[in-house]
Amino acid sequence: MLADLLQNTLDGLAQGATYALLALGFTLIFGVLRRANLSYGAAIMFGAYCATWASLRFQSGLLVLALVTIAGAVLAGAYVERLCFAPHNARGLRPGNAAIASMVASFALWMQFEEIVTLWMPQHLYAFPALYEGAALDIGTLTLGGPLTLRVESLITLACATAICAALWLILYRTRFGLAVRAVIDEPGAAGLSGINVSWVLIRVFALASAIGGLAGYLVVATHGQVTPMLGMWSTLKGMLAMMIGGLGSLPGAIVGGLVLGLVEAHTQWFLGPQSRDLVSYLLLFVLLAVHPAGLWPRSKPVET
Image (cartoon, rainbow, N blue to C red):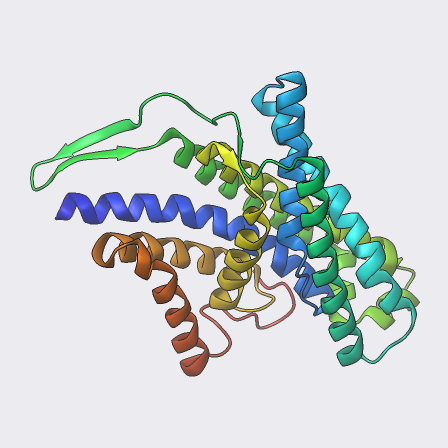
């Protein structure tokens, strides 16, 4: 029993690291624009299909496929920003109206991306080169329950998530670009008057969020060895769920929310079965919003650390 508990905890942390990366991308966009980008997962799916095409056509290596996935997600993210968010910012709509218009437009692009990839690559399921094909690591045998293993893919995911979180903190709090982002979050009007190119900041934020999402998407498809059009919906739901659990607009909250979601899913699947995994996750969100609407780690100021 102890071995099962520890094994599920390790698996949940690894899965939660992927959710944290997805939530970080959502949080960056929501923190800057105060708007939800429903096509975020679809952009990740587009990048994954670009990498799948490169793999089938050129038999590219893992590093090349990772870069192609990230580049495809960034390209799709820039497309979304130009069509869904930039026009509504320029028209001077009221914040509430602009948020609704952008959200609806991003949903339309979500459908557009799904149609593009299904027409481009009509087979529903495609194999994807595995991130690691060897056996799991045996990290010791517990006297009270049995062996404890850790997949190499899980270690890679955890390492990537840790590196991304550290790099994102350095970017936001140790660079001029990060200063500009925080100024835009605090007061976009004053940021523009002080000489900051708000439009350019928004484009770069979208590119950064899409790159993080592209990396998360690559880790997912390379770990599972397959890609389907459902990746877009899955990424959107998991990223938004982790963001809301952690706290809207909070980068530490996105990390905490992702890890908590991964742990809850792993333990629920073991004790109650896979059919109850999503039900318990949504129940957790419902209870949390009823008891503590700000999330587990609410931000006290924009993009709080």
